[in-house]
Image (cartoon, rainbow, N blue to C red; front, side):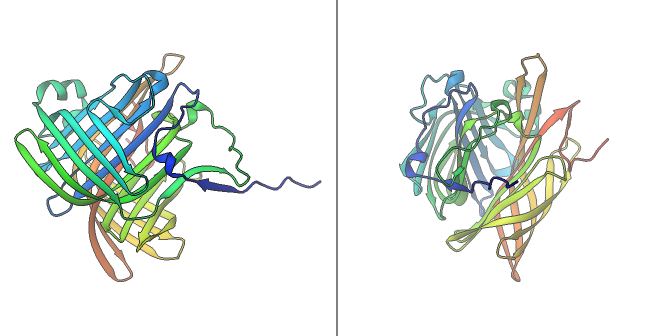
Length: 353
């Protein structure tokens, strides 16, 4: 008996993918754009995200600004939307100036100003007990790399079998490292940014509870050297370790990586030691130190009424990378997602009670 040969999977990406797509019928369809940028010299930066959940009638809007002294300016909302025509909601606008080359991010609204960002473990109290100040952001993101990723399909162009909507995180995803310039005004403070960052986009059905845990570490050292490390899952047998490294003007896949983390008493990451190996055989040793962290959360009830609680700790992080006898210093994010059970994150690297 002969077995049916496996179909080859390829990744496709077109300039029109930079713009909103026609939504799937899935209730939890999500079209998401995310951008970050950091100024290493000033130790400041921020990230911005819009996730259009048009079939649910709202967008997820997040603005997070890392300010001097460990302070954070933050705002989150679920503004109502009735179409998926653009990435604009709640005062945040992500504009495609030139596909794959230039995006512009602008925000006009308020942020809650947190001297102690850990207070966001209780958002109701944090928003009530800290000052809200006016905020204006205008940043330009110019690509310094090729695009990485896209929509997986079979080589003949046919769609890959659907993942159940409740288990989906995205059907397509791509990333790019960027140069970031512009201004951030927070209250009576104004900052000029001249730094580096990363932007990504995804679309398709998404629930934040579809992944048990992940560790996502995008970092950039200069316009010709950057990495992204990704560790997904809590079972060592099935854990997915991947990413990419930008060297010059070319990306190479990360074929293996490890992330070992030091936590504080709240199980927030404070530092990490990483190792990665690319498809070229090169190895990279990376040390990360958290500069400022804010804990965020997502809650959802199942059809049976069970409440699911996902925590995402978002940390501006400095990174030191050693490879080929050279040491470089850069900045980026350490974003840790965990499902929470009895008040504890369930990630495999979190100390057990």
